[in-house]
Length: 348
Image (cartoon, rainbow, N blue to C red; front, side):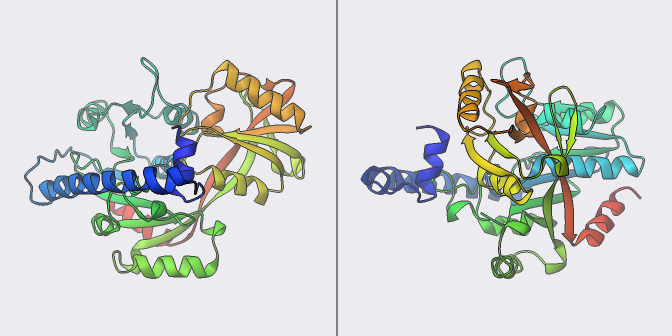
């Protein structure tokens, strides 16, 4: 079973007898085992039965409760640029999830482009990475996808929640997408609701009410991801206005493909189709050929993807159709002032 089919099952899109009578009960049983393991592990950290390592500089952890799709990479870039603007040397720490042997993953490729010159240490042992980063002169460490990585002490725990699918279909892995129960948000110092422009005002209000039982209301911010421009593999750019209304074919391998499609539609593109690959997918020549053939058949003007996917391709055209990535910027709508006060406190 591939990742796309798995998501169709747990989201309820697939309702055949195998999904209802076999897959979902199996996933539910495995979720119980997984949940027991998560609770035991968290209790060991809570009761200080497991060692937590601290370093000499502030550590900011950026994470989430669910697997993928909340917009961590743009936020890592946002935080990096904020600290750089305040004259601090930043280093990034990440696991290197789904990197090919001897290579780096798509997140590092994208962050190298968004944050040029910023050291990025990829290692499952992020405590070792933190020590190396400090030795090399880092003054602030940003721990990417760090909410569950409790071995490294942090000064600030930021958690992102996708307002469109906040609780990962309501269950722990693998029955849903939750890495740990919602109650774990009590560990968070600050929560940021992302993609708030893609849900209704009523849904957002209900979500905030649910969150305030776990996190103080003044510790909750809202944010959107705004398209800024198009860029291709040769670093050429196009303004959004110059291509608004164009018919496009899209592809992506991210945690929230539906959110990407909605972003394209809100930006004014006529989306003829979206090809979805598993999160962090490494594109082959066959994939490129299939995308190009389908785009050509749809008679589109452009092929669009995320910048996270663009860095894994090398061709400016698939079957004579231009390929562009859509640059996304973070816009904090509510709670920015309080968040910046917290960040300011780390650099005094």
